[in-house]
Amino acid sequence: MTIRVVLADDQALLRGAFRVLVESEPDMEVVGEACHGAEAVALARRTGADVVLMDIRMPGTDGIVATREITAAEDLGGVHVLILTTFEADEYVIEALRAGAAGFLGKGAEPDELLAAIRTVAAGESLLSPAATKSLITQFLGSGGSGGPSKAAAEHLAVLTAREREVLAEVAAGLSNEEIAERLGVSPLTVKTHVNRTMAKLSARDRAQLVVIAYETGLVRPSAN
Image 1 (tube, helix red, strand yellow):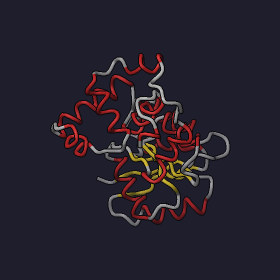
Image 2 (image 1 turned 90 degrees about the vertical axis):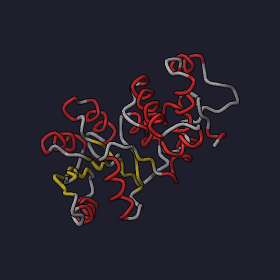
Image 3 (image 1 turned 120 degrees about the horizontal axis):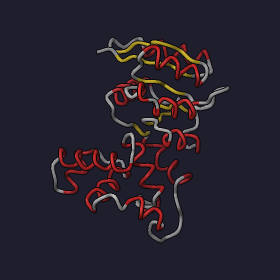
């Protein structure tokens, strides 16, 4: 199965470089190029893209608005957005994750990392750049202080069982289902079930949004990592 990719970046030279890289792979093809967000949304719809490599800062409709439009559209449910950014520790990246992006990667990533990231999000999984996630969370989502979650946050998490909250905290720590299963003494399938139920209860599109929720509600704090 060929992964259909749309490239959204206002710099033509970068789009050209990404096109050469993506099309060097036998299981990928570039089906469109966009220089602004509105064009990216239109191309995603017209081409039936699997993945949109989305820059954040573009003229007109930016990458955050475009990501929100893609993830909110029922007819684009199979489209996954991977944010490519020059500045990984950036408040706009958090906004993109809130908008439904499957993850983010720095533009300085190695070619093999980018190709692996495309395959990861195309498979419906989320991807957060490990080197940047902690810094990003600390700077923009850390609630500070030493107390527990606020009353509003506690109410938000009240829909979860104790085990689901436990699994959510482990997801926010960046652990895979297999690692969580080993830590909690359950099967990976059980963990997957808890993760899926947690996403449904919190209306989260994927694991990336679960990470954001865990930190925003204070369930997990940067100082604990």
